[in-house]
Amino acid sequence: MNKDSQGELWEVFVQKKSGQPFVHCGNLHAYDKEMALQNARDLYTRRGEGMSLWIVLSSSIVASSPEDAGSFFDPSNDKIYRHPTFYQIPDGIGHM
Amino acid sequence: MIDSLYNYTLRLGDTSLILAQRLSEWTGHGPFLEEDLALTNIALDIFGRAKGLLEYAAKKEGKGRTEDDLAFFRSDREFYNLLITEQPNGDYAKTMIRQSIIDCFDLLFYTELAKSKDLTLAGIASKSVKEIAYHKRHSFSWVVRFGNGTEESFSRLQKGLNEIWAYSGELFEMNEDDHNLIKEGIAVDLDSLKQKWESEIQELFKKANLSIPETLFMQQGSRKALHSEHLGYILAEMQSIPRMHPNAKW
Image 1: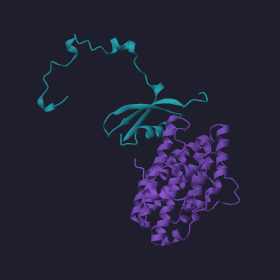
Image 2: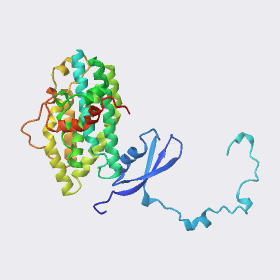
Image 3: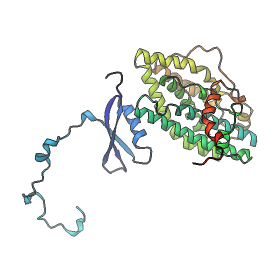
Image 4: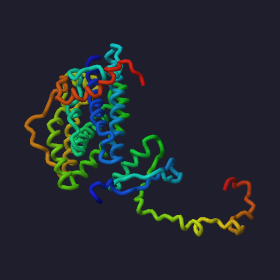
C-alpha cells in the first residue's frame, strides 16, 4: 500500500429484513474488517435501509467475464426440455 | 429551580453545539472519503442533540427566544460549553483523541441522564445514547489504530493527548446548578461517573501505548462562561450569516 492508499476495496451487502437475501448495495474503502463495518454503517445503513450487513473484500469475489457470456448465460431456448414446462403444477402450490 | 434547569440544559446544549461546529470543520477535509462522511455524520448527530437541548433551554427560559436565538445571538461570555470542545482540531490524531475522551464521558453521562426525572432531558438522553455508543466505537478504534500504527502516527497521537489532557478535568466539574438538580433527581452526579471513565480511558490509553501527561493543573472556566481565545473565532464563523440576515429563512 502506498502512502496515498485509501485501503482496500470492499463490497457491501445489506439485508432488509431477517430471512431475506443480502443485496449488493455498493462498495467502500477501508483498511480492515472493523473499519469496513463502520464505514458501511455510515455509507449505507443510516436511513433504515436494513437490519444486517455483509462485507467482503472485492478481491475475494470470483466473477465471470464478459467473454464467458455465451457459454455461461445463453439459455439455449431451442432445447425445450431444459425448462420444466411440461409439468402440471397443482393449484395448491401457488406461485413457484 | 427553573433557573438551574435552564443553566444546566444550556450548558449541555452549548457543549454539543460547539463540539459539532468544531467537528464539522473536517467536512470536505477528511483523510479519505469514507472517513470524511463518518465524521460529518457524527457532527450531525451532535448538532441534533444540541438542537433538542437548546430548544428545551429556550422553553425553560420562557422569554420567547428560540434555539436559533440561543445559538446565533449570544456572545462568547454567554456560552457555557466545555473548554475541551472549542480546542482546535489539530491533525486527525488530535481530533480523535479529544473525541474519545468526550465520547467516553458522554456515553456514561447520557446513559445516566436517560434516567432523569425530567422527562424531556431523559428523552433527549436516551435518543443520544445509541448514537454516542457508535461515536465511541469510532473514535476508540482510531486511537488504537494511531497508537499502534507508525512511529509518526503514535507521536502525533501522544502530542494531541498532551495538548488536550488539561481540558479533561472540567468534564467532572459541578456547581450549585448541578447540586440543586441532583437533589431533585434531574441532574447526573458527575462524581459517580469518574471512576468508570478513568478506568475506561486508562484501558484505551494502554491499548494505544499512550502515557497520561503530567499536568500540573486542569483548565477551568466554562462554568463561568470564561473561554479560551478560540471560541470567539468559532462563533464569528458560525454566527455571521444569521447576524447579517437575521430573518433569513431556508
